[in-house]
Amino acid sequence: MTKNEPEFESLDQMADKTAAGLVRAATSSAFHLFRDKQFRQLAGFEQLSQVEQDRIFNELVVASLALIMLILEAPDLRVAGEFRGYLNNLRNKIPKAQVAFLRESGVEKKYLRDWKKLIKMRYEEYAKDRHEVRAAAMQIQATENGLDLEDLSKIQMLVPVQAVAIGCHHHICRGETEDRDDLYKLTLNALSKFYVELRVRLEGGKITPLTRVRAAIKRKLDRLSSGKRR
Image 1 (cartoon, rainbow, N blue to C red):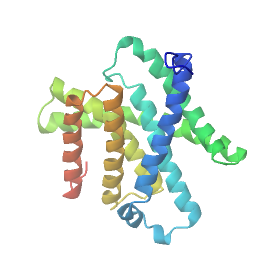
Image 2: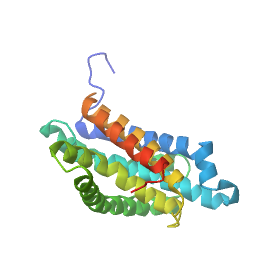
Image 3: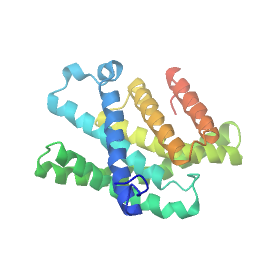
């Protein structure tokens, strides 16, 4: 390749390469949380079998993948209109890129089919849960302090990460989430960092609106710390 030649022959090829990078970033983010000593303690890893620990890691990876897909289709994502088609194509490539990554890592074919199903199932679940999360957040905000346009904007921006964090926590705990707020808090915090970093990149470094999101997430985590989880 000469210096003046384009790196990619088409936008589709660029999307393939970007999707591959995103699934690796998702795996890295999930692995960082999975190896966190506090997370492992709160999840009770000492009492869990290797199979169960592997299941939890898979849930963390799928949560990050689903979050990527929800970000790419977010209506409030601050990108040019003509860029939307590319992002939609990129979103559709995420599951295939994850399967390709696992295949390259030596995962057996029979498990790849399971991964396809799991990604589809969790994405659809978390996408559906967004509506309930949004409605609940709007109701809480309206009851506590009233609701204005800035509040609506913050709620809309928070919806994807909150929906994924709630669902991921539920699956990690196999539905037994009572008195496990600290584990939820840690999961939400890790996913929110990944979420903000990706949105900043997609929005070309426009960090100001996301600064408000960071503050909103911090307030939520502070409420959890004081035993006031909503």
